[in-house]
Image 1: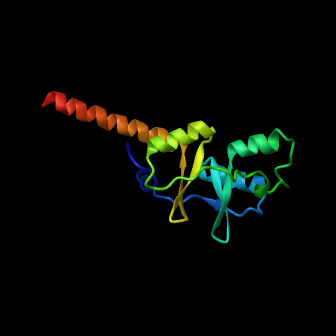
Image 2: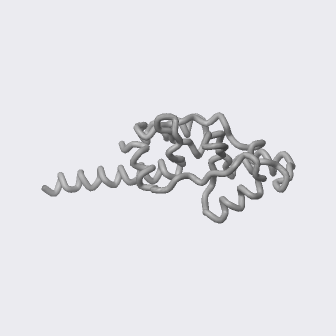
Image 3: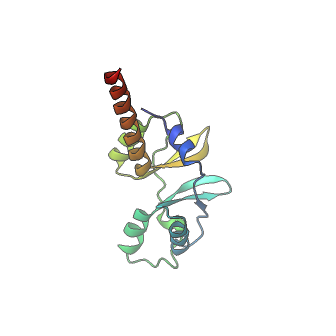
Length: 142
């Protein structure tokens, strides 16, 4: 199975980052504009966590907080497992399933290089299965 580096290379973009001091509504606006489900929270090039749509729904809406005044730092997820570019997609899927999470930071030599999502993992798994099917069909037909 393919590696995390394959997904990060295919995506070809760095994750969208925000400051921990911006409000939740500001972060949500950025997420809506970019059509993404999470933002990486950074301060002075240091990774602090990830804010996701799930964080918003569970830590703002359900707790009756105000998204106009609540800071991203108050609701971001900070305890997510970390993967490296050399890790397998299968390993990511296992971690995401065990921890019931949809996003994980990817670090290479202690530097954030990307975010891998459950959607990325599923797409990569489907691509790998298609490649296997094509190889089997070619083998059968030869």
